[in-house]
Every structure is written in structure tokens, then in C-alpha cells.
Image 1 (cartoon, rainbow, N blue to C red):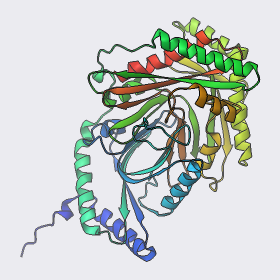
Image 2 (cartoon, rainbow, N blue to C red):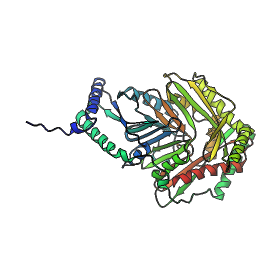
Image 3 (cartoon, rainbow, N blue to C red):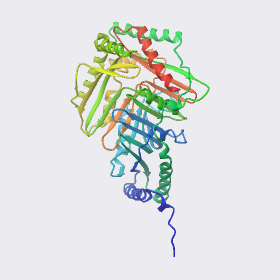
Image 4 (spheres, rainbow, N blue to C red):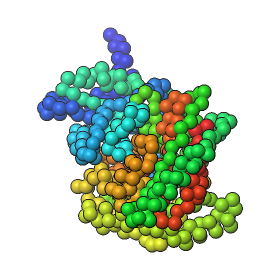
Length: 473
């Protein structure tokens, strides 16, 4: 008698998925707890961003994180675990949540990759009602993760297993979805920003908004002259709307094309909201026991010619005001790392980090790190740096609450990932925008120290907001 093959047997990866589920199911029943089965499969060379922007249901939680220094991109979607925290203990609560879930991960792959837990934090420990469904602290694990690391691409599948999970139907459905994903892969090559280009009139700050910002700078300078502060970052928002929705399909490829040296990121909240941006500022990176972070402060525009650009860069390197602003950031980071038992190393004087429309004073800082230190411990220690808050930190944050009329939300706050092997990467969410339908809020900031000129700082804010507005398309 001829036996027809079952539908399950014709699905690639079905057997491997079922074996993984059965192993995790035994552990779940023995411990009476939830477990995570994580599997990784190699993929052809693809663009994770193109895959993410092809996911039909944009309402589901999504993340995108692209690191230029590592030539790495991670696209993640399909909420599996999402825990939210607020208040003064939000970092501790997030750290404990992450530790619990990491201990319940069983990886079934020779690739030794993933899963990637995404963590986001707001600038302050509470958020206003205008935060569009984001929380002061979030730990998120998604079911699907497409990763590119240099010339390697792979798919990470994360499955939640409880003592009551039915392994066979879950394996069958997961294998079916993998087949559907693989069927769409050949068409998903690198996205081009030009393909989505469209005419767009970029908004500007009104004269009234410009005056209000300069008045804010003057109030900060008064506090500095009276020795209440050494530095404060003045942030400003620009709310824009249009007839059609703002599309990540336009904005993210544009940001990547225009700012190839920046971290491109997107993190979704509820109700179709997305916090996106192109940040030049790495908060920390941990890879194989080595920590790297950056002091990034002191800014100037780019020149129109090579000679002009070089001259502007030299002035930035030699301007006492910019050097003082940079030194405050450097000293803060070094002190915080030493307080956690690390031995930071760095070179002086600072160099230049040149981006497409702006250049910054830049000092990389590195240290060896024990795997006993959670990345979130260091994220908490470093946030907020003087590059986004001020000095002293407590006084600067109190002044921000008094002088800034809008909630910073996720602006200038940490966003990044932690994997199961002690690796991690976090950025500071500057040069960013919150988009929801046809509404967008653009964020930008400028560091105010003794010697700052309100008109110059306004020009810096305008430059940063203009770059964001142009990218929205």
C-alpha cells in the first residue's frame, strides 16, 4: 500500500522545530514555568529592513536596529514577551525581567545567534499621555528576527512554551510560516532611498518658536552664570502634520542612505506609532567581554568644500567652549564606569566624527567587562549623559522639567538589544521622530554651556530638525 507523505513532512524545518518544542516542553512541565525555544536558520543575503517593511500587519510590535560599525541589522516583529515598567526602579525591574527570561531560553542551533531582547527606556521615569503607547521601560522579545551580520544572514525563531503547549500543531504552523517567509526572500534586496523619493516641503520653526527657544537658552545661561549649572541640553520639538500618513517605507531607507555612519532605528508602540531616527551616539556596545562607549559632544556644521569643511573642523577642535562641553561628557562617562568597577581607556585629545550634515567632537572609550555585569546596569549608570542632559545631572534634569514645555518621551533615552551570549548594543535616541498616522513630532537638542550664543544654538536646532523633516519624505 502506498502511503502519501503528510503535509508536515513536506515543510522545511518542521522536524527541527518539533524536536526543539518537545525538549522545551519537558522543561516547562518539570519546572512548571514558561520556556523559550529559540531556533536559528541561515538565509541568503537579504536586507532585513526590506523584510520588516513587507510585514503586512503594521499594528504588531516591531523593532529595527542597524549598526554601521558592525555592519549588522536586526529586524524583529511579532510580540512574544512584552513587559513594561515605570518609576525610579524601572531599570532594576527591567534588568530582573531580562535575567529571568534569559535563563529560560534554550537555543537549538549551531549558529550561536540570538535571541535578541529589545529594551527601550524613556528619558524620565514617567511618560505623559501623549507618549503614543510607549512605556518608561520595556523589555520585548519578538517571535521573528531576521539578522544580517556582515556577509551572513539568518532567521531567529522564538517560541513560547508552557506546560500546556501542543507541540505538534505549533511546530506545523511555525514551519508553514517559515516557508512563507522564505518564499518572499529572493525579491527583498537592499532598499533604495531613491525608489521612495517624493516631493516634500520641509517645515520650519516659526519666528515665535525661534524666539521662545532663544529665551530658553538665555534662562539656562543665567543659571550657569549663577553657578547652578555647568551645562544643560536644551531640547525642542516640532509638530508637523500632512494629508497623507508618514511612512517608514520612505523615512527609514532615506535615513540609512543619508546617514550611513549613524544607527538607524525604529521601535513601535501601540496604535501604529513608531519612534524612529538616525542616531550618531552609541551609549554602549559589548562584544565578547569588551565594552566600547563614546563621548560625543561639541558640534559644528559641515563645509560646502573640502577646504571649508577642514577649516570648520579645526575651529571645532580648537574652540574652548566646544572643548569644555566635550570634556564634561568624557569625565562623566569615565567616572560612572569606574564606579562600576571598570577600568576605562581612551585617547586625548578628541577627534572628529563627521556626519553628512554635522560634525562632532568624539572620544571612544573602552574597557574589559565581566559577564557578571548586566548591560542594563551600565545603561542605568550612563543615562542620562551630559551630552543629552547636563552637569550636574540632577540639577540639569530638574531644569529640563521646568524649562521644556513638552515631554521628552523616548527622545535622548536608551534603546537597544541584549542577546543570550552577553553581547549588547545601546544607542541614545537623538535625531529622532515620533510618527503616528499623518502626525509627526520631531526632536532635536543643543548643549548650552558658558559662552553659548542663543542664535548659534537656534541655528544648530534648525539644522537637526531640517535633516529629520527631509528624511520623512
